[in-house]
Each structure stands twice: as structure tokens, then as C-alpha cells.
Length: 467
Image (tube, rainbow, N blue to C red; front, side, top):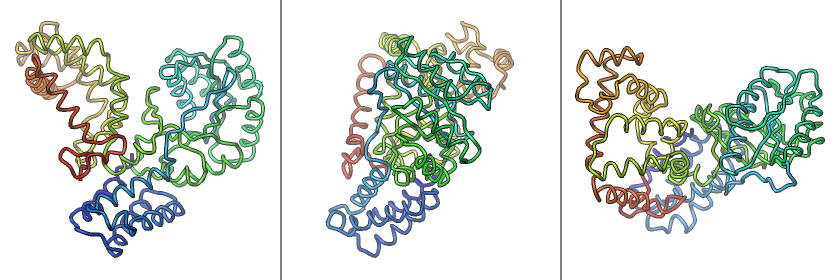
């Protein structure tokens, strides 16, 4: 997400970096480039106009022109205004209500409402420790009801069956009654969508809304529709009192215009980003962290939080002790590392959070993906226990057998063994106290980011600015 916008803004910022002072003339030139970048990212025109005007007012003032490093001061102004456009702070779900709290999902067909319902249920279960019940009021698509049932079973939450011959309002009321009897915390109501906004659909959603009185009414929208996403959100906001927006399919959106337009046009905050197809692929929307990503400074806080949630700390501790005792790092350990990475969800989304990723060529970033990790695990699974423990015994005939067993080729097996050898060499350097020193060094480099905004290390050695 934001790849195109990030690249264009980085180019503009680099041109300003070497200038000793900023004048109204070169600020105007830079802002023309920023304006063009925003329009190409499919940001709504009224949003672009207001954004540029606000940046210009601050940029020609003492805040930037009088700064010792005016280029960096301008970057901070752009960062602050990006945060302001997107809503300043993360606005979480408001579940302060007599249980069960009701969350109503609305949106067009194909926007990802059903998958989002499951992602929200999982988010509430794992991070908020809330028990949820899901129900589908989409009586026009029996497949949607079955899909929600399957997802509920997968993530281990409650599901209320519904039928096409039922009234959507009765379905929603029945789910609330069931949740009340079972002492559940939340009911997530998935509503029917249409291919476009129409009166019949709006009337049905209004009836459901009036009947269930949700504490959260979330508009689910496909981010790849750009300005259309913001305009559709506005139409729904006029019909329903939206409390928030969930932007889906952001992992496939290189422009990011919807994220920068929706808050301004609807007044409703973006609460979550859908970053992949898995039920784990849902992120709370933090405007300051997203602004940092747009400016190419990454999002270290979200990355650390994701790793902390996903990594099996017992296994990590076990591996650390094994290495400290001087025992070798083998392919069993390598497979375990790959399995933990696979469990972290969309790898492209994780990479976006690394500072400086905007400067990495696309073909290099594309090499890191979930399919490659699954292929690596399949190759190691095809080996015998002896081969995993003593990789040096893997000769030509063994490679052919491993390749055939994993559905790959010998070149892929060779590439895996080369990657493993490189990682094994790195692990040997971690014996004894060297691991602690290495981690301390990494922490020092991350500390240079200076907090969520990434400006604490500006201008100094080890600072967070990748420009």
C-alpha cells in the first residue's frame, strides 16, 4: 500500500535535502510535485487542495524557513498534515455497552464484509478477550451464510444459522437473544450487499440498524476503488450513523488514495485495515504510523507488536539456549523459524513496516512472499530426520528425491541449502554473550527512530530518516 505515493514523495524530498534554505519558490515547486503525487494516488481533489494549502501555510512560516535543516522541517510538516487528514489517533472499537454489544457491518457486494466479520471476531477473541457470535443477514446469498459458518468454525467463535426465507431483522434479533442467553460479549451482524448503492438495500440496513441499535456501525470498503470508496462511504454515512470504516484489500492497493480521503469526506474514522485474506490479516489503523510508512520511514512499532504476538516465545527461548550451549543450528530449527514466519500473516505487509523499504527495488521485495516460505517448509518436510540434522549428507541423488517429494526442482533445493548455510553461519556468531550484544546493537539502531513519528533521530547518527 502507498508504494507509488511513497516513491514520488521520496523523490521530492531528496531534491530538497541538499538545499541550505527553502524559499517560497522552491517550496511551491516541491508542493506541485506533492500535489501531483496525491492526485496520482487517487486522493479526492478537495482533500488534495486543503492538504496542500495547509502544508504551504506552515512551510513558508518560521517553522520551516527559519529551521537549521529546512528540508527535514518540511518533511515533518508533511508528516503532521498527513496524520491530521487521516484522523490524528487510532480510534478503537467502543464496546462499552450492556452485553452483548452489537457491531453492524455495511458495504457493497464484494467489499469483503463476510471475511471482515471473521477477522473482527478473531481480533476480539485474541486481543480483547471477548466472546463473539457471528450472524449473516444476507438472505440473498446462501453461500455467504455458509462462508460465515465455515469461518466461525475455523476461528472458534459462535455462529447463528440463518435461512433465505427469514426476515433479516428477525435474524439479527434472534442472534442477540442467543448471545444474551449464552452470556456472550459481542454480536457481529453481517448484512447484505449490492453491486451499487440502491434504495432497497439502504432501507433494509436502516431497518436492521433500528432494530438492533448497534454500538458500532462499520462501513466495509475495498480500498482499491480509490475515490469511489470515499464517495460510497459518503452515501452510506448519509443513510446510517457510521462510527467507523474498515478498509479492505490494502495489500493489493499501491495507491492508498482511499485512506487519505475517507476521513475528510465522511467524518468517520478508519478503524481497521484488511491486509490479506487470512483471518489474522486485520490491523488497527494508526494515522501516525501510516504517515510514517507513506514517507518511507516504516512502522517499527506495529512491526514489533506483530512479532511479539506471533512468535512462540518458548520455542525462541529454547533455540537461544541451544545456540548459547554451542549446539549447531540444523534444518529442523530452520523449518521452525519458517513456520513461525508463515504464522505471522502477510509478509509483504510486514516488509512495508521496515524503514527504508521504499528504496528497495520491487523485484527484490516480490521475492519475499508466503508461497516461498511454504515451498521451503515443503522441501524440509521431504527430507529424512538424518538429513535435517546433518545437511552435509545431502548429495545429488538425495536432492532429486527431496525435490520430487516436495513438488519442486533441484535448483530450489540447492537455493534452500545455500540460504540455510548462510543462516547457520550467522547463528554461529551468536554463541555465548554475542547474541545479547547483537540484540543490544539492534535495539540501539531501532532506538534511533525516536518513537512513533520517527523524527527523534533526525540529523544525528543512526537516525530514523532513510533519505
